[in-house]
Image (cartoon, rainbow, N blue to C red; front, side, top):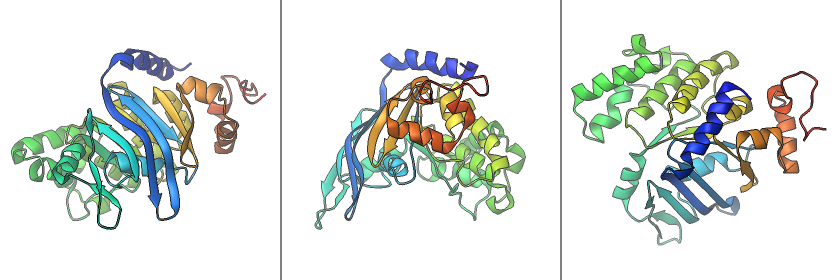
Length: 289
């Protein structure tokens, strides 16, 4: 087991008695006749890193968007910091938020990092980072700027504070997006495949920032196709298949000895040798033999 993996195991043991930051219970989401989530349940306690893996169309991103109130679930329960999101049916029978102020409050506890960065193109990096603290949370501008400068330095972008997103690489834009998400001091960080839009040579710089956050004890729910990274930083892994939790557990179990035949096939398909094999090349894990 790697040092990072051992740290994740110890962290997972330590967090068993921690407060529950995210609670999802029997969540369903339909888009017309398409039933995307079919009764998903998930829990993240303070300090945990939950990695959600699965193939395209399994419902990973939809689950994350429901947690952050960007999509309205058809049914089910979502609690953030112990507060259940209130939903109601509109005149067309669609589920909508019952309390808009509650949604704003919930979102202020969740930092979201998207696949395609979603930085405001007409703002410099420093303006991107201070926008929500100043105009939504009411933080004084000078205080927000001081904090933003620290966050940009933390992700290696101190010298880019006055640069517009169009003049940055994809990796730099995603690191800036992480700084922006951290600026609201969220209870939980949500990552929706943060490296999927990056060129391969830029993936590492973003994963390093996320890994540093994990090692600091930041609570995170991470949708990713980076299996090696998930194994190293996650305290708990959830494999979604066709809108359902097919298998979940500690990373060493899911990647080293998966029980589900679907998960075994998924891991074969991602073709990552470090997940599928032990330290010595040519040695099979027990699920491959």
